Image 1 (cartoon, rainbow, N blue to C red):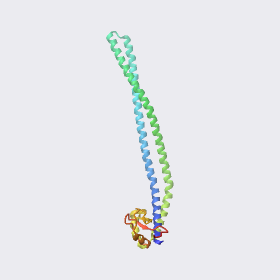
Image 2: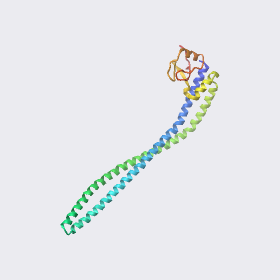
Image 3: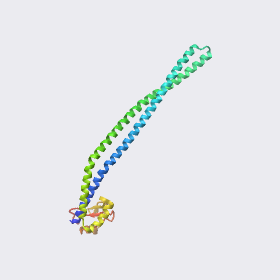
Image 4: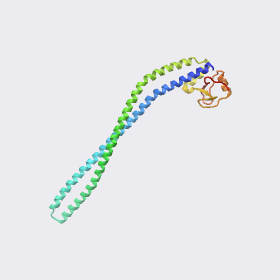
Length: 238
């Protein structure tokens, strides 16, 4: 197998390694941003839950205050009822008491519903607080992990990038221009191995002439996807 094919294989391997390291470096900030967004949503849910719970409690307190006022008024009317001096006044007081008692019955039902709603909202609020705590813990963990791995990944990327530069310098001159053009534009996808006489990048079947050119160590670009082709190690032409 030609030295050129071996050099291209090595370049492709290093390009994939560089791409993987860059992907790992980018993954940390992406995960952190996703965790920050989750925490922001959790904060909003806690704030909304607190506001709703507070509003519902205030409403329930207002209704309970109204109920006490009406109960006090009913007591006053009942005292007046015992002291009224005419049937007409007596009947009016009876009707007022009955109306207030009916209103209090409705208000009592509303208070009961409000108290049940408060219990439900308190449970939801507690759940939202727990979710917020988990989101904050997850963010702290991701930040710590990203910080712990970043230095190692950056050091490894620096080493592999230097290895790539050395491998590029070893590439024969007649391949360099085409390789450099493709590598600048496409990175690791600039290269593709021939697998069973097809391009491993786009699975296009290659012509016999293309294979012959590769065997002769000529620079060949896939006509379908534009990748610079190379033969696999130990390739034997059919």
